[in-house]
Image (cartoon, rainbow, N blue to C red; front, top):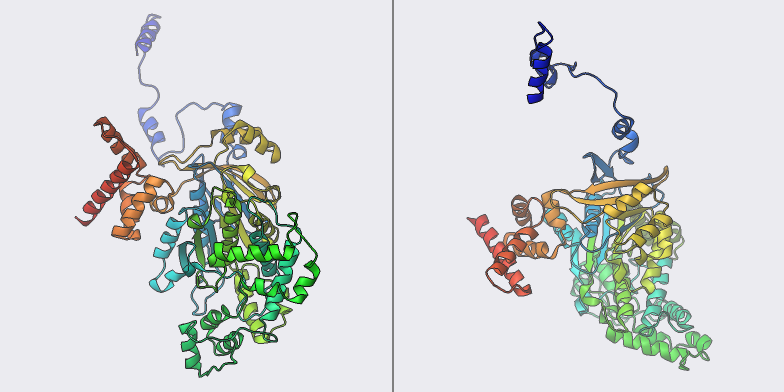
Length: 615
């Protein structure tokens, strides 16, 4: 203002000139700046610099690959960016999510699974209602528990059994017989037979070794074939035993079947299938198929023994004796593998398995033990993912059974099917890794989406890195890792700079992620923000403090009400700042803060929230 006054005085000294502080028409200025009042502007026009003009042009702004999608991201300039898992824009669907702890990778995986669950499905259930997709999650930890709770609460009471979360334990009630076949089929399908050979070979791998003894895999395959042959209808089918399953006994009474001493479990299965009692038929079939301990019996048959009679291991132990010893040991070490199936998830469509209680992290047996449990979970949640039409049509079985499984295949083919491994670096690195590689190779033909989440890119096998279609970088911790990733995937200089800036979620701003997407039309790299609403954040959060508070409120208020209250009180999706502040106040008063005191603070906060909720 001082400079303006000096300028006005200088002009007025020239003679009779007069100056005024107002410029132009004040009314026109107001009207041109008012919304939707005037298209003209009183501001003097000027040409923008080239750098500013290019920054505002579409060439340097994020472009959408999908017009519509079940998962919504946000670009850095605030626009919605849709993504559709399992889209026809891609030839296959293999997602790899990379990020160190706290970078938001588990939340990203859960948000994608939520998007798949909410995607339209073309199949119909028997009662005409819409089907949920098939989503199977294998994890070490409770990361997926919040997603399962959110989905269960969204379903009517009569359908909540379709979404389940289980924390597996080495107890009889969780028994899953890997030798189970598809309903009413006497022999396993090709992919099931391959799985069994891999599993039995892994069970017979010495602790600390990377592979089994020479000849063990061939012996396992021979024993598996012989076991199914021996217990089929034409040779020595297992006899029906009343009281093994009260549901089966009751169903037989209702259909008017009277069992005698010659009745077999396969005969009972057929009778129940003929009368439309599929659930009870499946229960009966569990006692008809071989079990792990049966391999010891069939390994003594002449047809199995003869080719391996002279073969010895590198420790000079006969291969046959070593096989029998290790199978016998496995039946004791893994009781849930050695009994008829009791753990039934056949009615569930979205399944999450937490393997925390059945995996090992230390000791020479840790890798093998963990890999075996992953193999078991894989079999339990994907038993019908890989059905093949040509193989089903070529089965030597009654046509009514073939037609039944063809209907299952057709309905499955229309569904989204998704297999997820969180904390993939904990899989053990033995047989399960090869199983996942096989899944990746055939997932396109079977219509299966596969998602793998781990902390480092090196956690994934080279074959998977070559076949991956989508990579989601939540962060890359070191400069050497950034250079390696950039060279492998030919990333641009701008993409490298983005990798250096990636960090964990920021309250109120979301979690940044760099997506490397391979579509039929080309390769796209995008910087995106995974920003969820407060209820989703509270449902999917994996932070220890938040999950502890959430669990307390779920138990006392119910999950649906608890999420709504937490979302209203902590809209950023986390109470960690409040908990840390209260812990800091205790330290200021001289109170020693340990894990027990941290738990007390979380419990006090939960008590306060409950008190306010019921007031």
